[in-house]
Image (spheres, rainbow, N blue to C red):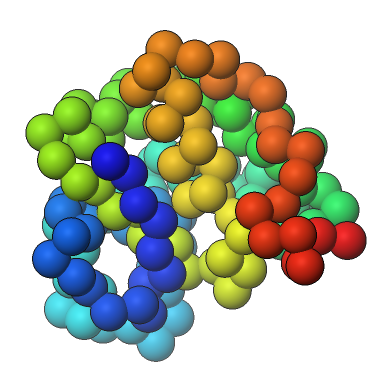
Length: 134
């Protein structure tokens, strides 16, 4: 089971193995306060893609497509997460303000698809929270 949480959400026993999946360390957060088991910055979207996306919702579909291309090209970056999730819960930690449109959401969906052998290239055409889609 793969969960997604914000870095400022309180840790819980059901989180399992907690992984920060951001290229940049979250502002104002001390390492000891994150309660993460790992920081896998390499699995996050590339710096170029992250800057291009800029958390602009109108770029969300294309961001998903491009990030999944990056993931497809680098299975050695995400396969360890899938291995750990096969042994128990994993929580991907994100520091993005927008909790619906960020790399951890895409990565979580990608890993869920990979775990069942499904297609991993189609972006989501809808938001998880329809009130935030524009």
